[in-house]
Image (cartoon, rainbow, N blue to C red; front, side, top):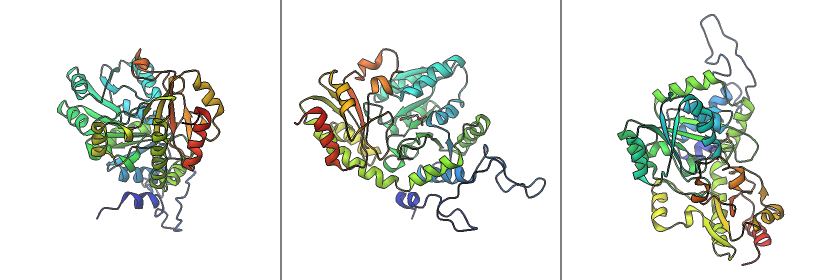
Length: 381
Ligand SMILES: *Cc1c(COP(=O)(O)O)cnc(C)c1O
């Protein structure tokens, strides 16, 4: 029987140190490693190439995501950067609307200069996905749920369509993590994470992970991880390993809170719209249930008046006004300014990322305090 997710998580890095039996993965704070003799290696030579603490994290992530190998980077964007290096000048890559703003910025302003072209498409529309491949896209990068409107894309259909055209399907799984969704098992070729979010879970480290399905892709990503060198340091690797141990517990608690908050918001007279896939229509929920085991803990909502936004951001007492998500502390973000100032041209309004939209990352506080805080800034309903 394959080991269950909770068991892999709880024991992340705990059986590595044969010499001392340390339960907590040691932090190998070393740049280089002594060679036993000429032509011999302990398996570790230099920490850009490989470091034991980072390797323990990478092996855990590969297992959690059913990949052949995983790679840890200094940030989520560094992981995405290594993946973009798989492509060549002139290649076109389709990306889903509502991608994290920094990813779009990297594609457009970073790789645009090198001739890599992006096509922004609505990845929740499989006809648009097909069209992008007909027009020659070599890969598609999607987030599901999308950010910040939490729309769900069909990962199975997207991966299948990509493969029909000999292209790669890449999924940014930051919002759901392997606890709720495992894109490689759904057909994707590469999974990428900002580990700064749920995988870390404590808003205390910036990190990224890329997981490759095949050995061939793993070799290429591993080459660029070493060649570019934006690797995750040993101390930060340890922090992510430490975070992983409680990932399933945290997400379960955060998601439970999120459902209550989303329902409360939905019934509030000053809230026009609530974006939370767990409350979506039957069709979206059926798709969600077919590929994920939950709806996550990020909620976006639109208030009825833009003038209310600065008041909310100033007066919240439990929610913290800060960008990011996924930690045990609940955060509130203003996407139009904070995370989505870079967006597919002219699309912010059409996509609903307007000056009345706020995004909540629900933490593990008591739900009564979270709702009480929202009551104090929105008024009772
Ligand atoms: C935060 C985030 C990123 C970028 O990751 P960093 O760790 O901040 O570099 C990429 N994708 C998504 C979905 C994110 O939320």
